[in-house]
Image (cartoon, rainbow, N blue to C red; front, top):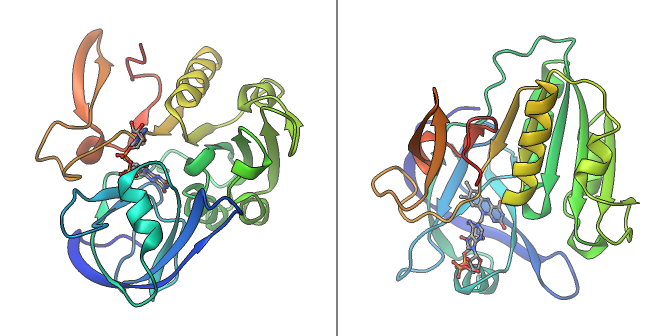
Length: 259
Ligand SMILES: Cc1cc2nc3c(=O)[nH]c(=O)nc-3n(C[C@H](O)[C@H](O)[C@H](O)COP(=O)(O)OP(=O)(O)OC[C@H]3O[C@@H](n4cnc5c(N)ncnc54)[C@H](O)[C@@H]3O)c2cc1C
């Protein structure tokens, strides 16, 4: 699925709200040759006059790609107003993606998704299934109305556990509640809010389970030209800075200087 990074103009196929309050939307853009590796992302121009915004695709079917987004500010509000047939400029694919090279076909891994980070796990689950790797997906959200891609991930995973803060879907708790019941795994892959990624990374380090996390930091250029998305990491006891867009967005959770 890998492809050369380039700027292209796609056309919106559909853009529809997923909930009554229109907090979450699913967009599909016709952009052939927009293949990507699980964990890579796309920079999308939401208008001619603003910085591009980063989104991780949830699907690619040869004609185009889909992604799910939350309306949080001006850029995503503008995006939610775009209608079918509108042309949009896309730079893709960007970033490193998850590293699956250490996994053997009999491995069992855990995927963890929080909020708008969950849909981007769908291509990862599909890639793992193609390699006959067993997946247990844990999805966390504040409440049932904020739970995304649960049915899709149920179909793409061997086991799915849903947790919500208020118990309105799945069990009450957070992903750590569910993670604490799992004794072993060959690896953890997680995407979601930073506090969740931090808690999962600390848990995984204590259990000596390799843990890759995909950071959704704010970013400006998207391809390493500025340091707008720098994140601190510990390398051999030394603090260094890495660019989420060019060196990530996927990092070894144990290396990130979380505090
Ligand atoms: C690699 C990557 C993949 C992403 N994939 C998705 C995705 O698939 N779906 C999705 O909904 N979002 C995704 N995001 C986040 C998305 O890029 C931001 O939500 C979007 O840029 C916000 O734009 P805005 O103009 O609407 O908000 P702004 O006006 O820029 O911000 C509104 C509010 O959200 C906060 N905010 C903005 N961006 C971020 C961020 N990246 N992290 C935390 N807080 C932020 C701001 O501090 C502010 O409080 C991804 C980000 C990255 C880096």
